[in-house]
Length: 361
Image (tube, rainbow, N blue to C red; front, top):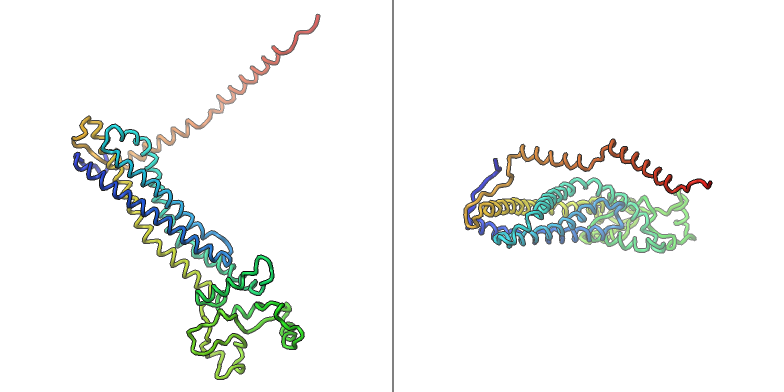
């Protein structure tokens, strides 16, 4: 018994083909949207590549671009099938190709669903990647004369100003590293000597932050240095003062930004999945309805369209049986293989004997 069977007259088949043609082109545009979305997300990730430790999160935009291109091609094929569905001489050529098309369309829906799942599942990996990458970026902030790191200072400064953040977790991260290059330190100064001697690793540490941490919205001029010394500034109390620095860490700012981008793709991707499923089901109805009309040798007569020729259980059993037959066909019988090898050895021995010259008399 066919599953979800419907009756289709000639007029209904024409309307189905026309509607599916429009839906296919809508799906093509959705595929282009998915591809552009993947490209945009890829570019945004590459812009911050210097502050990311690994590239696992790139799986999301890579998958979006792949699915977008595949969706454009698959739905363009669907539009061509719709054009040929009402021509009895041209439609049969698509019958074999449609089997592969159904598999591709179903795979696209699964991949789009995987994109939605990955967008949420990779948040932990993204945070860890940013944590390590930003820590290294801050540590190499001073290396403006080291090849490969000379732009690290500019990257961190622009990042902190653009995302209104400071440090990895907060501004205190700058207290733990030397972010001023030795090139700009006066080693004849007693203050510099004292700071270096007071540190076990011989680093020049400051209770200060780079200028890019300053919040321009603060009414007070920016305080960058001696932040923990309440006596160093007039009318200033370190413990209770609301500092004129960005309070949010850059790791949290970037995580919120990228997760916002990926989470916003969720509703759009789910909508594309629904459209793709509609194309898939409509194509199946159109194919079976047209095949039924051609089988009855009455192109203008009424035919039946359905999703599955049998019920789900019977269809599953049939597919399973075909898969097992293919596996059995691909396997090699060990006994026959051994017999073939033995025959080959005997033939080789016979050839060797024939090639050996007889002894001279």
